[in-house]
Structures are given as structure tokens and as C-alpha cells.
Image (cartoon, rainbow, N blue to C red):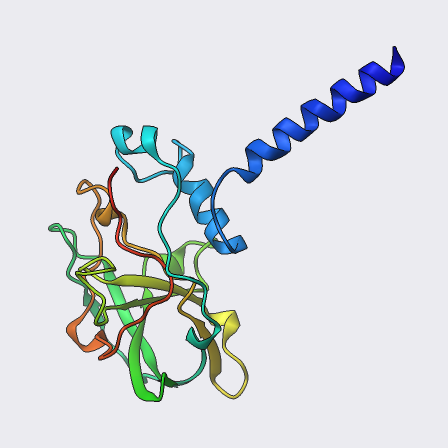
Length: 203
């Protein structure tokens, strides 16, 4: 009887474990993002899309899209209103410019700091890095992709690691009710970033 009970418990745990593993994702980052999208309390998806959601689409993980960048901080940057997909105008500051080489191409991106985040203990160390590239509007979302960078990631020599595998789409890529910052034109990369999140495709 004890053996039968033990087998039943193992079977139950195995089924639960398989259920947890059923969510797609090749990395911890992808799994966490998929988990957030699957959860109705945190998902930006419309109810009809949430019902059919099986996982987000990503480019294959590619270590060549993990690069070291040098940050040149912007001194005395003014606060400005960033354009969004709606009439909302959140306040940002230019934090600095990132210089790096990717696929043999010299690149630079401007990184920003939300003034609202500075007042939030949970997000005060977050920096905002939006960008478009030559996949935008085709394989990736036309409005660009985002990457979160932490001020705590910046080394003493003002370098940091950018991992383009860990990018995400603005919520308005999934639901027009959201207000999302528009990627500034100067943050376009003249190459294809075949890493990170792809364009959302409805089933």
C-alpha cells in the first residue's frame, strides 16, 4: 500500500513538473517573459490572444549579440517629453551614449532615464534603451524593441554588457490600449539584429 501511495505521489509530481516545463523558452529570460505573458494578471495580451497563447517567438539565442559597450554619460542633459503612441508625454533625460561594435559594424545608441522611475524605489536603477534595426517591420516589431539596463550594471570604467537576446516588445505591440514610448530615429541600427524577441503573430 505504501508503495502504491509513493508511486501515486511521484506520478502527481511528475505531471505537475511536466506542466511547468510546458511553457516554451530556451533561456531563463525567455521563460520568465513567457510566464508573465501567460499570467492574466500581468499579461498585456488581449483576452482572445491570451486564451491561445503558447509562447512568444524569439530569434535563436546567439552569443555574438552579447557585446561590451562603452558609455559616455551626457552632462547637464535637459528633461524632455518623450513621444508615445498616445497623447501621453512621459518625462525622460538622456543618460548617455553607448558605443560598441556588432558584427564588425561600429554602432551607437542613446540610452535614457525615466524621471518617473527615479521616484520609484523599485525602478530607480533602470535605464531605458529603445532601438530599431533592419529587421524592424519585418521579422521584428516595426516600432522597435526595448532593452532594460541597470545603472548597477555599469562598471567603474563606464563599460557594460548589452545582451540583444534579452530584448522585448513594447506592450502596444500586443494591445493598442497601452501607451508606449516611440523609438527616436537616432536609435536605428543599420544592420539586422537577429536576436531577442520577434514580432507577435496571432494564431
